[in-house]
Amino acid sequence: MTGRLYGLGVGPGDPELITLKAWRILRSVPVIAYPAPTGGASFARGIVASWLSPAQIEFVISVPMEEARFPAQSVYDHAAGTIGQHLDAGRDVAVLCQGDPFFYGSFMYLFGRLAEAYPCTIVPGVSSLGACAAAAGFPLAARNDAVSVLPATLPDVELTRRLEACDAAAIIKLGRHFARVRALLERLGLATNARYVERATLAEARVLALDAVEPGDTPYFSMILLHRRGEAWR
Ligand SMILES: C[S@@+](CC[C@H](N)C(=O)[O-])C[C@H]1O[C@@H](n2cnc3c(N)ncnc32)[C@H](O)[C@@H]1O
Image 1 (cartoon, rainbow, N blue to C red):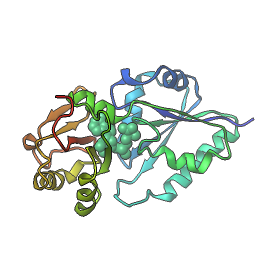
Image 2: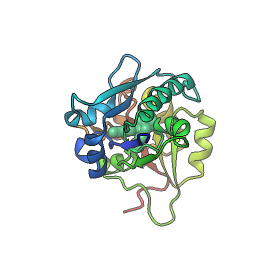
Image 3: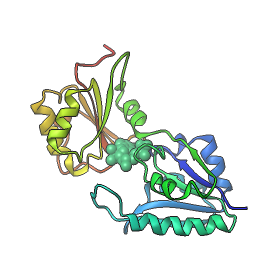
């Protein structure tokens, strides 16, 4: 019998925000895999580090930090091959996913390669959207609001088109795009109804008005939340 593949959502950063189900599976599987930027530490592993056992086999999926539209296919081909060998040997494998596995999670590239051949369970996690809204005290949407999730990597013309069509938005993958996105929001008159949230749920989390953010000081794990027509809850 083959092993089972798990996509384990481990939440946005605070270890207390992992679900009981993910925690139980994390502690029971013999093999743990997780993405990490090439040469860097894995955020997902860091969240659950205190629960890992030396008896568990760990497999790092080393992901080059590029902005290519599609991920490095060879990285996921190779990772799927290694994980497939464990599954063929009957060992369950949990792939750690920061936040939720199916919300912009790289786990989906392994799911696409392995889920037809092996039994697979996805354990949803608390996503950064809810975490950032909670940290900022900034409800995401109400009544008939349409919320857009927009990667900051989109060109200005595309961001503008989508911002003009929504009631509320979360702009993710900010990092070095912050200054450009803030300038765009100022041009569109949307900067004052927005919040910048960085590393939500971690001890070093920051929530700021956009004009209080130092450009050049914005990590990848940050996003902007905004409402087009003021704060719907007032
Ligand atoms: C590739 S997406 C992964 C999202 C993740 N799977 C989730 O469910 O939240 C990465 C983006 O999510 C956002 N993000 C993730 N965790 C965050 C956190 N703790 N605080 C602020 N933004 C976060 C950032 O915009 C970051 O660039």
